[in-house]
Image (tube, rainbow, N blue to C red; front, side):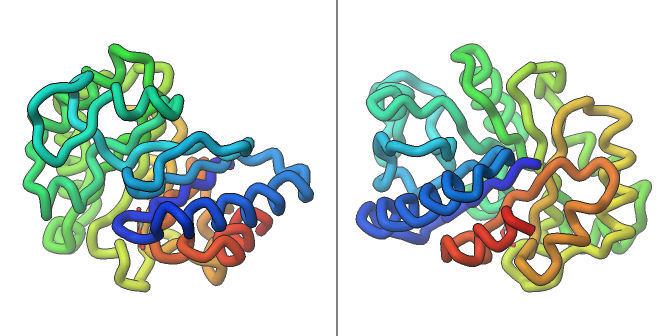
Length: 229
Ligand code: PGA
């Protein structure tokens, strides 16, 4: 199983280091065989002595240059970061990243051999139209994306379930992942209010290979409770 923690705009450089010390200890002591990823904010990226994979939540498709406020691979290379989240709904919606920009980022980081966790997800009004509309919407988010890329992991995150405390139901996750599996033969994560209370039922669903966790990952105890479930 894959367990990925997306800190979003939470944690500092100091608290990320403390978090990783606690989580690393637990992961090592439990001889955990799952793949564990942590995506801290850019200011907390660093080299850490840990089996946990550290990834970037975002970067601009450039090595360096004049892109005020952005980071490129020069800044990621400093810490040996080779994993990135692309297409998160918060970047699509709040930061207005179009499918074109998302695809451009994907191509850039693929070209450089990054492992990519590529996020897709539908808004509530699409979910309310039923399964067929959901799949059509999700498949459109693969436009311009090489789904055969060997270092691709896909995260299905229904927007209405992110940060709301309301996860998708087992049936919704099962039918969506089953349909996605027919188009994409890559590990499929579920994300959206995954937490210790529902992790067992989520990871027990067919075609779910792991979870991408926001809120419930911010505390290392809670995140590890999910990993050890
Ligand atoms: P959440 O966020 O776990 O807080 O719902 C998930 C995500 O956005 O990756």
